[in-house]
Length: 159
Image 1: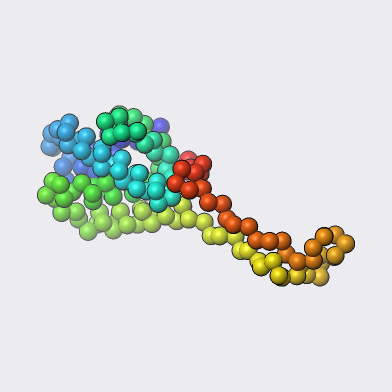
Image 2 (image 1 turned 180 degrees about the vertical axis):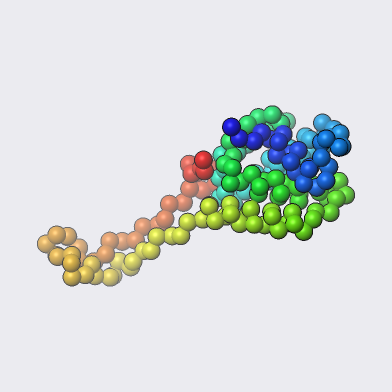
């Protein structure tokens, strides 16, 4: 069981010093932070960071109590980066520790989302001594192929 959107939002408020147990957060504040959370996750999705976060079809359709199914390695990045995004709207300065934590957690997400490209040899390179010509039709390396490009709505997701 993962975090709900409400838990991400309240944790971000706690990060900037507006904890729910001390300050009464109004429903409008929670909805505004939820819109910021949805927009941040949409931005990350466009960057190629797929976290299995369910995007609403419109801002009005987003539910605070819906399950996110985000992997636990992304929780800190979501909370701290959301705190950085909502803090100016409440006149709060984000602590340097929060900024460092947000940067480090986001770098972990980028590391998980990035894979090195497979080396492609040119088609003019001979196969070599171990590849006898009677085994292959062509004595040269096969034509390189383009790496798979999933695009913004590709099937790749993290779980």
